[in-house]
Image (cartoon, rainbow, N blue to C red; front, side):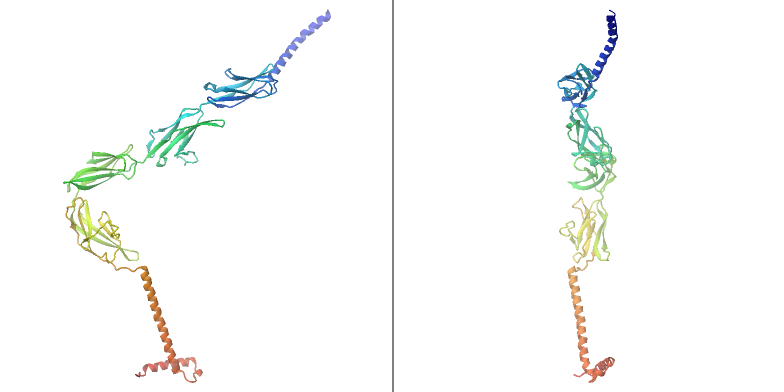
Length: 491
């Protein structure tokens, strides 16, 4: 009896120890399942993403579950072999953004992995380029901003193309293009920035890229227009005279608007679309002041006005004179002549030239290439002054707008023509002939002296000439020549 009581008492003392041991075994068994989850951090919308989960050192069978941090079970897989990674896949939707972890159960023990963040990438589509200003037409020095916009897409990168060549910071000069996000910025546009632009928006998941290209946008850079210049001419139309006023700018981009101001009042305007010039018709009366005219030019940013011109047509009159000026080379050789016709008065004089009372066809380089009219025909350049160009020159003038008007002539001026110059081959031939003639004269003189000397030696040499010295022989020869010179000649 006592022995039975003692056994029961010992059993009561062992129960807490057994309970603690059982709890320790459960805890240690639970901590032995440690799954590891691997997989992508991004996936395209509508694609299928696959995670891999593995619980090393776990006895089969092992049950794997893929769960979101919100507690939703995505998929389950049972590994009957043990210690093998399993694939846990799911369809990616817009709600798939979030964190996921793996839970593994083996032998009644369960463990969870660390979580992985998944970002859903929406493929890009409907890419377009917008501009500021719109439309992309701007003047030099203005700011241009192009934006690459998409209708749908996420996690995007952007690539720009100018005239179908990729724009990169290393490929373009500093400040030529500024790239920032989905924008391409030109701070001060120049003519070199004109051309076609387009962009490509793209995203990447692992080694897979999705692209969307925009249509091309044409950028136009307009040049600032220069201050216009004004001029006018007169022509006869029936029984009256009309003035043709021309307004012209040397640079600028079309279209521009030209206007005619008469005494500071706009009387007409025209839009130039093909050239930087505008033409206006006005009534004129020769000898009468018709007012002061100016040209105005207007663009989207500019408004400029030309200098004034008085619409007064003075008929040709007064004295007509001719001045002649000769031009020489650095070697003081006559090269050309300038003939200037001075007219007393006249706004639109027509000048004609005469040589020996014959009208010269000035302005026909095929016939007379050495005659060049300049300054509206008021000056005639004679680039050749041979015998044919010499003679009496005169100039005459009349109103250019009246073919029936009288001519006023200047007094004649003599232009002296030079003798025809020899060509280079002629000069070489003459020089060579002169040289030959000189050599012939020298050779003849030498031969004559030799013959004369040979005749004189036998007459002055004695029989015993071998005994005479060279000075004595020379003295006797000289005496003999003197005797022959003064001796009477026999016929």
